[in-house]
Image 1 (tube, rainbow, N blue to C red):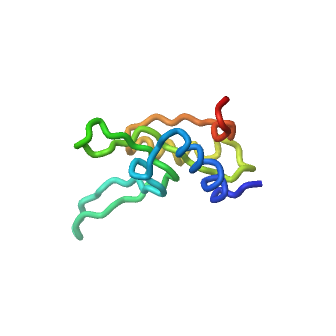
Image 2 (cartoon, rainbow, N blue to C red):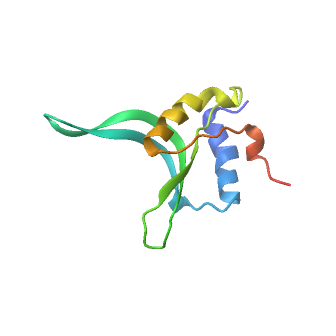
Length: 109
């Protein structure tokens, strides 16, 4: 059985790279949080972390924008295990969440 860390290193990272994603467009362990302004100044309100955020650039000069989220879990957990965490993060980024089983990480034939 693969741990969450093993799943990222052995399955997800290779699959992302095989599909042409480059490191400059991959963010790992990103925190979604709103900025609250209080008496002591601005502070980030934590909403959890997502394992991967894939980004694209609309133009060469633009900042990359998030287009996909990947939440890794240990192999023994069902694919839906991280869905609530991904939904909370996606709501902050105005993204939709799709879940895929392990077969997503296998080479396409």
